[in-house]
Length: 316
Image: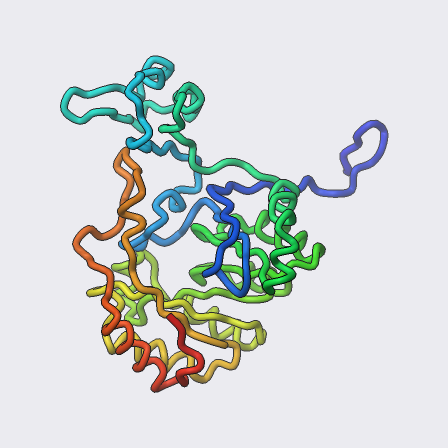
C-alpha cells in the first residue's frame, strides 16, 4: 500500500542519502578537465598503502588535528562518557569503545582540532554544491568524479546521484576498485561517462595479501565492461616493493592491451600524503618504510607498459 501524506498518495521512494567525507573542487587529476570530486565513505579493500585512511570505515569517525589543538581541554570536559582523556605520557587519548558518536567534543572544540569525518548528504545536497562550478566544467571539458573509499559500496545513493548528474548534463567519472558485484556495476554504467579503474597487483595471492580481497572479481568485471564498451582509464598505483615489479606491470599490460574499452593507462607514483595527514587515534597512515619511486624507475615502468599498449596510451 502506498504511503499517504496530507491525503495525497506518495508513489515515490524517499531519495537515498549517502555518507560523504569530502567534496573537493577544482580537481585536476580525477578525469578530464576541471572537476569536483565527491569522496564516499567506506571501502571493502584494506590496501597497505592507503592514503585516505578516513575513507575506510563507512561510519563517521573522529579525527584529531594536533597542530590545531590549543590545549584548552574543552573537548575532554564535554565528553559525556570519558572517551576522551589526557594521559601524562600519551597525550590526548581517544577510547573508541566508550564513544557514543555524539560528537559533543567536536562541537565544543574552538579551533576545529577535532573534526567528524563523514556526514550524511542527500542527492540534492551534492548536486547543489557541484553545480555551482558548471562554468568551469563547460570551459574545460570537466565534470564530477565519484571517488572514495569505494562509491559502489553505497549503491543506492551512488546510482541516484549519477542519474541526477546526468539529468543536469554533467560529465561523470566513477573511480572504482572494481571489487563490486557485476549486477550493481552494470546498473551504474549507463550513467557513467568514464571509469577510473584500479589494477594494483595481478598475482592473486599478492593482491589478497596487499589489499585484503582477491582480484578475480576485479578482472572479471573488466572483461564485462569491455563488452559494455564503456571508456576506461586503468590506474596502477606504483608502490615500491609491492606493485612496481616488471612482472606485475607486464602482466597488467598483457591483460589490457586487447581491451578496446581501455583508452589509457595511468601510472600513479606512491606519495606520502597519507603519512602527512595529522590524524591521531590509531588511524592507519600508509607505509612508513616506503619511499616514493624515483623518476628513472617511473620512466622505466612507463616504457615497459608502452611496449605492450603503445606510448600514446600511457600516462604518469
